[in-house]
Image (cartoon, rainbow, N blue to C red; front, side, top):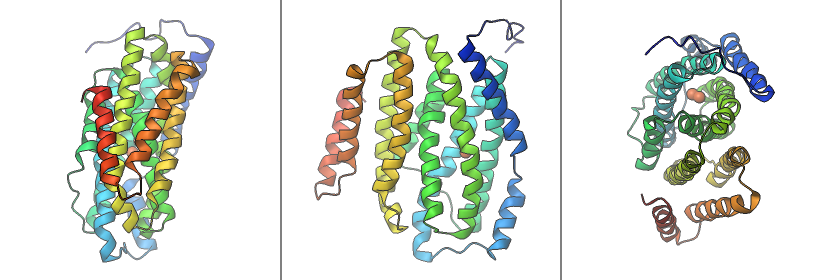
Length: 304
Ligand SMILES: [Fe+2]
Ligand SMILES: [Fe+2]
């Protein structure tokens, strides 16, 4: 650890200067829009005279929000690490603001789960592997891509669908605050990742793309584990998946553009991922076979 006296002494393109301004704005917006987690939870509880969850839905809601809870901890760790490691002032500020938000997301979700009498459980192995891959990488670009552009869009999708399904009124009110914060976090990835990618070697770029494909594959598997819980809450998992997929494909398209990958090379990757997702989410009787094929595909591709 050392003082970086050279942190201001590098030139920026016009595009990078514009992104830096937005990143600085993320920090200030986070400050202005910050909310008191203890106070907001108590207000939501008061407004609805406590949390009310139908007993037969508690397990399903708890299993989905255990994934969210541990995902919030992963986001807290990753954003803290980015706040520590990112060099430019504005990106460092945006990551610091995110770490503050994630700490609040984590403790409020924990308090909420305690309130409804649910003990957060260990999450499925695919989602656990996904989060550990993002937390464990030493590459700043992989951390940003994994957390801000892959994990957070899925979290925001789950928040939206659970809120709209009106599963539990206190949670629906709380999730409005979460969604607002998560949108700022995605912006950190969108604004800063291109600058990192432009400085990468070709090998590093290919490594980043393979990392993204690996994460997509683990995400598909993780969402598949949650399918019965979504069904129990009256949420169509196909809709959840399509919404999350759109957000992810937008991120992948942005990355491909930055990598200078032509459509010709890029389309087969999308097509392959779509086939894998369709197989994993097939409603046919052969669901388990399809799932095995998709797992095999991942092994062939990634050797994992
Ligand atoms: Fe969060
Ligand atoms: Fe976040």
